Structures are given as structure tokens and as C-alpha cells.
Amino acid sequence: TALHSALRDIGRGETPASAIFDALDDARWQGFPASAVHLRYIENHDETRYLADCGEAALRAAAAATFTLPGAPMLYYGQERGMTADRGPMKWYDGDAELTDFHRSLSQLRQTESVLTTGDVEPCSVGVVTTTTELATTASSGVEPTASDSVEPAADDDSDATAGGDTTATANNEGAATNNTTDAETDKPAAAAATPIIETVDDPYHVVAFWRSDGDDRLLVVLNFSTERQTVALPTAVGDTELRTDAPLRKRHHPDGEDGPGDYVVVDSVVVCRPV
Image 1 (cartoon, rainbow, N blue to C red):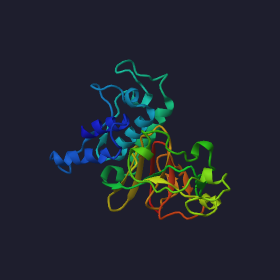
Image 2 (cartoon, helix red, strand yellow):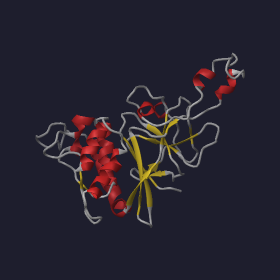
Image 3 (cartoon, rainbow, N blue to C red):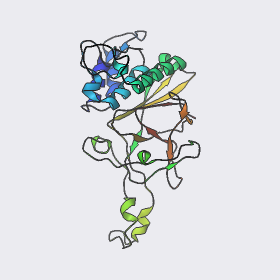
């Protein structure tokens, strides 16, 4: 299917994550009726293993896409156990138990949240934070920040900061904190530049988000195909629970307390939540 090909290309880094929407549009362009149920999968007996081709981080996001988009999700044997060989005995005893639990949680989420089966898809515009200014932990999240949760700047040409979109960037907090001289361009003390400024990429390459809505319920799904966790700026405030894990959502907020209309959430591979 078109979605299968798109998820492969996204996983390899050959196309932006937003290509998911082009794949969904392709089905309508081909004339499938709205009542058609498409099979959603990331690998089958004619394909190489997604894990071997794209890596585990992308596999988790791609698998989450098949369970949170319209259609019928399909698991090819061994996908949930981390198999990389095209054929071979099922890894019942020495497979990846954590990856299996991840797939199980996606299946349970789809059974629990009926909107993932019946709801429409609406793209949601999000940003990815790329500043070195550390975001603080919100009181409602109940999760203390760790070194791995801190926001890191984009490191290479394949990162979200350089792959597309405009940034809202004017200051480097790290440099300003140690410079006591006067800024030649502004003729103001350099210390004034230490005011925290959050920089974001407004058209992220590896991250995509969409709403699922059926008129009665509405969920937000955020997918991260990157090998690094991302702090994602949402356009609206969301609840405090990550629905797949039923755990507190890892939220961050602007150090000076001047958050916009939405929230900042930490996304490893997938976050599913409800708007406030």
C-alpha cells in the first residue's frame, strides 16, 4: 500500500514524516470508498524486515502509525519480537520482550480508544524544540527532568533543525551566561541576552502529528521517527496522561513561565493524549 511505502521512506530518512498524509490522500485519489478498510503494515513476506532496514526507533513510530491511523493493523510474524531475518523460526524465547510489550500496548490502546478505529484524520501542526535552553518540568507532570530529557540542539544535516521549516531563534543562552562584555550590535550588556528563548523548527522532518476525531472524542497522536527523543511544541494544551502507557505525560514549560497556548511534551517514539 501507499502507506507501507511511505513508512519505509520515512524510516530511512528519505522523506519527511508528513508523507503519511500524502499516502492517505493517495487512497482517496485511487477511488477507494470511504467505507474501505485498508490493511496497515510495515513488513510482510515480500519485504525485508523493517527493523533491519530502518532501525528500532523508526520501527516503533511506524508500528504506532499502523495502530493509530484508519484501517486494520497487521503484524507480520516476528515484528513484535525484533526479528531481522527475512525468514526463520519465530523468536518465542529469545526475542525482544520490551518491543513485544510496546506492540501489545498499541493493540490495547486501539481496543480501548474507539476513536482510533472510527475517527477522521486531521493533520496537526507542531514544532520541535532545538534550543540549548533547558525547559523546566511542569508541576502537573510529576516527573523530574533527567539528563536524557534535556533539550539538545540539532547536531547534523539530517536533524529536525536543518531538514525543513523556519526557526524562531535569536539567542544562545549558553554563551550569554559567561560573557560579561557589551554586545557591539545592540550596545546592551551581553547579560541581557541570557533571557531564555525557546527555538523551534515549525516544519519538523522526523516528527508528525495528527488528530483522530469522531465528533464525540478527540485524540492527538505525535510520532517521532528520529533516533533521539524530541521535545515537541503543541498548538494546544493537553491532559496529563499518556494514553498508551497510562503514565504521566512528560511535559516541559518555558523557563520564564511564558508558555504559549499549548504544551511542550517529550516524545520518544509515540505520544497519544487528549486535549484539555
